Image (cartoon, rainbow, N blue to C red; front, side, top):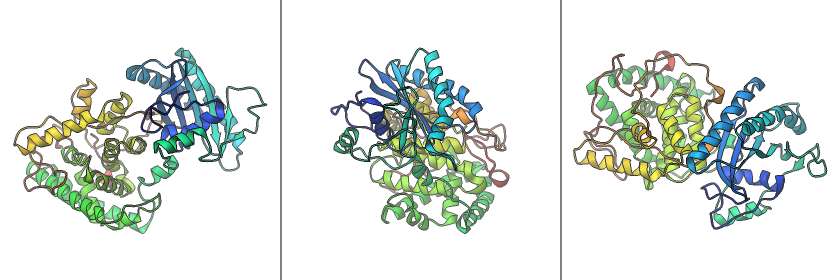
Length: 473
């Protein structure tokens, strides 16, 4: 099989032929850019030589009764998405990746997941696309659900190849492709702090800031002032982070966390709940600002503690956008998955995810952001928010009306399939100057006040209610 040319694998000029389950299992981290633990991964194959195409990842649903409907949705998502991007797949490869539960052996894990593999094979077959291979990867071993020959696929499984010893590893090293560790490690760098004195202090800072900022955001004049303050503070924090050494591997983000006070984090987190302010912040997408912006959005996502977990959707989606814009597809996918986990109805994250699935060119959306910033600086009107640009690119309607605060709902297990593709967000909104790459925000660079909605809120604002309840946009 030929390795498809994507940012998570070797280049098009380096075609790698994979023979058999062992080499397929070894190739998975290079296809994804990380080790996808606790995941279903499906990869489309095209042509007689089985060229790798679109890919899809979803966390394994914990309840077996969910497996059949999830399998149907995943099969349809991958096939329809592949048809939109290039062509209908000729076959599919399935990977089930999960380490053993406590007291469970890897072989028992494989058997426990066998019904899920069968559901996926049946769902793909019902759509006339066969599953060429279905593998279980657990605790350093792999099993084939399709091969009945115990001579090559024994009941105890086969060990995975040692890292760096295979043809795929050599081709990836030559192409400069790196595996970023496990999905769990990547998510941990963006997850809210657990129970600790620092988390409690941050929660109190968010409570105090919310009591002051929300009423100002809902006021036409105050909203502009909050936007200016939020963007100026965010830019100052970016410069502060840029003057400090960048964090290294997972678990070394404490340096960045220590550079941002709880009150500063709270002010920016709540300010970003205003859609127009967040859209202006999306302009820090390239050049020297991109790296420090990504560090800032990641640090703020970790500060969305306790009842403010849904507020992480804004910084996580901004982190996804910056990652996507700088060709870090794996990082963008992880951040988008967490954003939709924090708030499944967050429009910006939904549209970025849809744009990714459709294989849109990120430069189109970057160009929109640049052009709208130029129009603002000249005193003209701009073209709309990133949601509007992404919807236009996908021939969809305009942005959804804001919702009133609502209590949290039970999250849907199958709502977040994540096909591995490439995409980016969109643009900004309304007159006034946003902070420009390379320059601090200027006085007067606030979004236009707009009109209050019929439900009593300003357009595009996430309004914290009691203990963090909020509307979504």
